[in-house]
Amino acid sequence: MADIKRDKLKIRNSTVDFLVFTKDAHEDGIEVRVQDHDVWLTQKAIAQLFDVDRSVVTKHLKNVYESGELSEDSTCANFAQVADNGKTYHYKFYSLSAIIAVGYRINSGRATQFRQWATKVLDTFTKQGYVLDKSRLINGQIFDEDYFDHLISEIQEIRASERRFYAANAARRFDPVFKEFYDRMIARGKHPKQALAAVGTKLLRVIHAVMTSQKPYNPQKLLPPSTRISQLNP
Image (cartoon, rainbow, N blue to C red; front, side, top):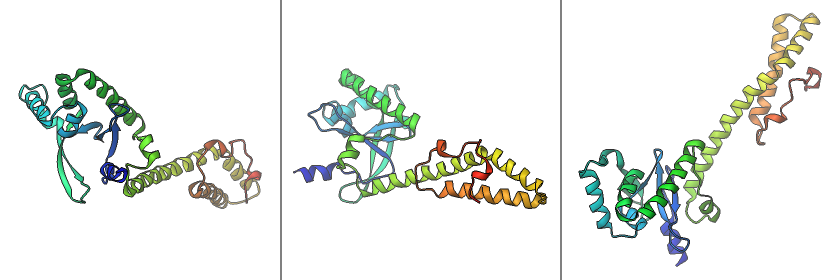
């Protein structure tokens, strides 16, 4: 029975984020789609959210659109989703505005609860650029292997961006050190081109070390600007 339930909850589409809104600690959660800086539910999920028959949701949505309260074009979208049988289907999803409009006609208390949860989710997404359902990630019963592969690729892209940032940061922080090295080379009678080439070689070594490091990046561990050139590896 547990395996059947787990298969039912498994998400096979890793291109969007899915979260679970739990109405009650003793009830099954409702799968919520997070995409385009909004949250989306199907009519079936909206009915589950407000504990009514789907026909009730259909009726209220029709009234919402016919009355001009909301525009169907801006609050309803067709999204493709891979079902448990491996086939791709298109479903109609409704945005938070439509969900709340229906909710206030059915159960204002539940609508307010869901709106507060969704607002918090979207606020987190806006600030961080992502939202993670920690409990589901820890339990490992919702997401499939493709989802985690996608998540890892996103993290790797962020790490690559970090490498570029800290490489540039290293260059800025070492500027006084390499200037001192350049001046010393000139004082020893080196041609400016030779001195510049030597500085470039040392700078590239520093950048390469930062770019290829497998350890988490900590700018505080970079050598401070007060470091003297004699402390650098030749």
